[in-house]
Length: 226
Ligand code: C5P
Image (cartoon, rainbow, N blue to C red; front, top):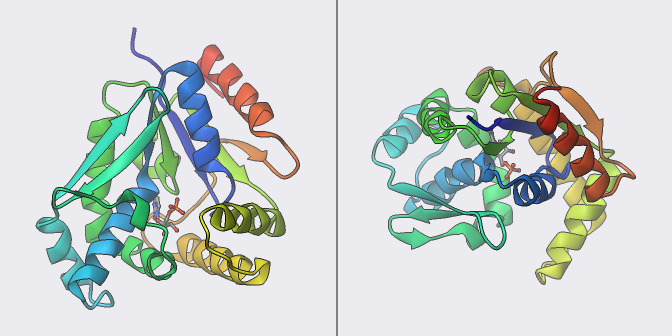
């Protein structure tokens, strides 16, 4: 029997990745973080010194883009981005990429190319896919659709802690400004803006533990719907 696909969308720093990884581990699903794909485009743009303000430049980049997405299920669900035969995953959360990625993601040619790959990835079912347009565009037929939200201050606090654990120290205010600017651009863009579709279950993760959120979503997956 084909396993359910789970679409998880939400604001930057709302806990999508943490929740999706734990859900995938628990239910033995495959995890794909589509944000890493958009980040890979921004990474390549910076590496080549391209003018990202030009849609044609970005369209040309994705036409010749050599990105392999490697998913690992065990012992811990992860996905790695292999760009031009090099694993760049650990370099994709640089502040320069955070600043550029919403612009790159607003280009329709970039979205068309990546959405196509994401849809192919989910064809056999059993995927937890995380992003901004998963329920609305990539997998409108996903059996379970989740929209995660959380208070901006709480999201910035969590993100600042994650960064500090990696040796990067930013103030809560700096992180807050970065997250809210990215949310604004992602929500206002013309092509595939971040939206909560009517059928999605909206969960506010402020004050909830990862286990509580995953318990709730796992229950929906077992029932086969929201
Ligand atoms: O999820 P993450 O914060 O890594 O996503 C980085 C950026 O990639 C988002 O701010 C958004 O601009 C873009 N994105 C998107 N559609 C997706 C996933 C990410 O536009 N499905």
